Amino acid sequence: MRIILLGPPGSGKGTQAQLLVQRYGIVQLSTGEMLRAAVAAGTPVGLKAKEIMASGGLVPDDVVVGIISDRIEQPDAKHGFILDGFPRTVPQAEALDELLKHKHMKLDAVIELRVNESALLSRVETRVAQMRERGEEVRLDDTPEVLTKRLASYRSQTEPLIHYYSERRKLSTIDGMMAIDEVTRAIHRQLLALGAVEPKTHGKTRARSAAKAAPAKKAAKRAKAARKPAKAAQKAAKPAKSAKKTVKGAKKAAKKAAKKAAKKVAKKTAKKAVKKGAKKAAKKVTKKRAKR
Image (cartoon, rainbow, N blue to C red; front, side, top):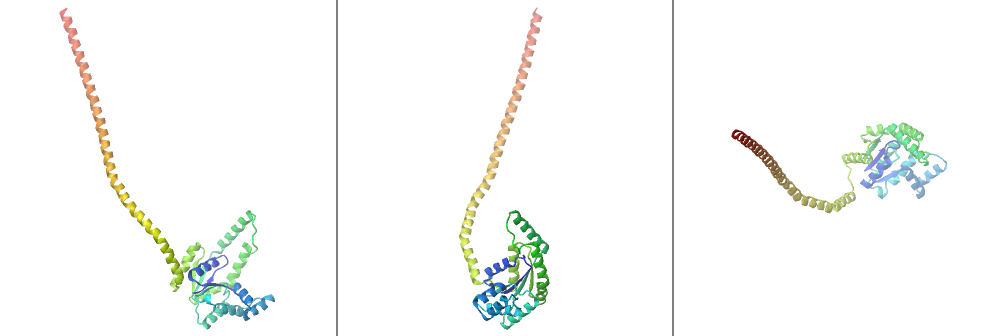
């Protein structure tokens, strides 16, 4: 896969580039790093760049394209690459198209990470305020003022690339305000739709991870299966427990009823006895009076 990542400063391009490098086995090509490497290696293009930089000038597009041309032919770039920081302008994009055409290569995707600039500025302001509260040093290039300038530069120079690649049906736009893993998944889905294939080594790594996880999964399954009869027995014991409770309740109710009935009978008997005794006593008294 040959990919270009577009997005303003703070959109998370660097993070996503690293994740793509790990997943697809491709290399991240930074123009700054490539320039330094070419100068250190003393390549013809590197020496030309060194001379320009030494005089304080900006390295022209043709020199940068020449460095990219040398770099993408190296063995580690055979599976593809992500261009970071290039192209920045439409003329650079046109020069890159010509280079790839000359090398019989094609650009597979241009991923734009779209973000809310106000939210980005708010994040930076919060971070700077927190750093100052903690007494930490704030980098000169990490302030809302610097970010505002960089965003303005991005809009004027790099944003026209969105229209350029959109016309060529290369552009895919992703919401860069989502969580990092959500952005990664969205990029991956887009690349799969474009025919991206993960290298076998990555697939093997995932397979090994799955194989390692398999015994634990199996053991968990067995434990779950073992718990099933116990659960069923517990469930079966529930009606018996309920029946026992019902019987106990019935016994208690019967005992209560019997006690109540016995009490009633005893009360009735006592009342009868009292009544009988009173009647007998009254009869005796009447008889005694009659004898007198």
